[in-house]
Amino acid sequence: MSIDFIDLKAQQARLRPQIMAGIDKVLAEGRYIMGPEVKELEQKLADFGQAKHVLGCANGTDALILPMMAWKIPRGAAVFCPSFTYCATAEIIAIMGAIPVFVDIDRETYNMCPHSLRAAIEGVKASGDMEMFGVIAVDLFGQSANYEAIAPLAREYGLKLIADSAQGFGTTLNGQHPLAWCDLATTSFFPAKPLGCYGDGGAVLTNDDALAAAMDSVRVHGKGADKYDNVRIGLNSRLDTIQAAILLPKLSVFSDEIQARNKVAARYNDGLRSKAMRVPMVLEGVVSTWAQYTLEVPDPMAFAATLKEKGIPTARYYPKPVHVQTAYSHYPCGAGGMANTEDCIGNIISLPMHPYLDENTQDMIIETAKAAL
Image 1 (cartoon, rainbow, N blue to C red):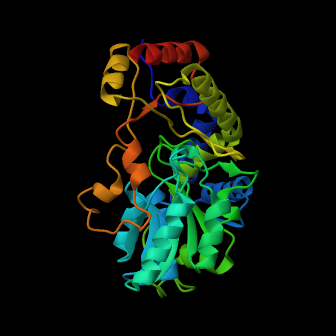
Image 2 (spheres, rainbow, N blue to C red):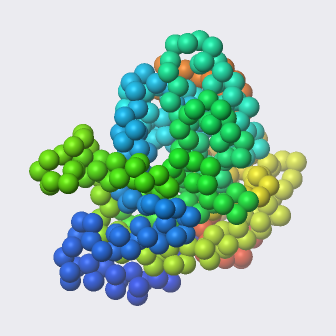
């Protein structure tokens, strides 16, 4: 029996006629770059994500770079971000010549800890070594960060606040999307993401008219009103029309898939919760998109080997946090320390998670996981 870690084939089978029709339309019209499907997708993403503006772009990393370029972030300025995440969050800060300052996570949710953030901010302020510019919180594994606690901190210190929702587009906190608290939110359409295309793609969501206009310029080489008068340094970061055509039918079933993901997660929690396994916790009021189902076990390598014998794939997100990776180890950690990050990395492991995981297969995964311990 072969089990997919993320089953993209089941979703494709469900939506194949609509996806192929969309691709055929793009091929027939020949508007491969920024065609009408891109604008349609942007509007539907805005409606879904409670945003005034959405700009599609080439990938989720560019989605983070676009606002940094539009804001003209000062070189050497501090931007606070978690280390327990994919490197792209810190990467774009460093690319812009700013300084990522790493912040610890909440031990229960794995998202940015507000107490650690305050300690990091106050530590940088007290040192006087760096100008402070912003905070990038990550909606890790599909769960909204605690923006009700993080946003007041950002406002108190005059910092920009970005929601990196590469894994978490669609997550809500008390019925509101992360943008309700942030200057902007970003997402990725990498194929393995909850809302993924069949290549690279990303988007930025904001309610700021001026910021949206500046990012629209940045994503097309810094364009101005005159095609041959570029008014700022920019990028070539546009969403392909074919990818937009693929995402449109996927977005039409996305709410259903989020519900299905939560049912899968609830069955995992009910079946696996024990003293030997630490199942994931969701913040009160949060609806997660469950990009990953990550638990903690005493020996994740032995656990993975046992599951592999039964044809069950696993993955580890993230056994080596960014602050200890070679390219980032010289950047500062906040004054709050990284105790929670360092405490969890030796135990984390992720099980297959997608909205088309049937109960029989999931029961087999649960029983094998329990036996592995």
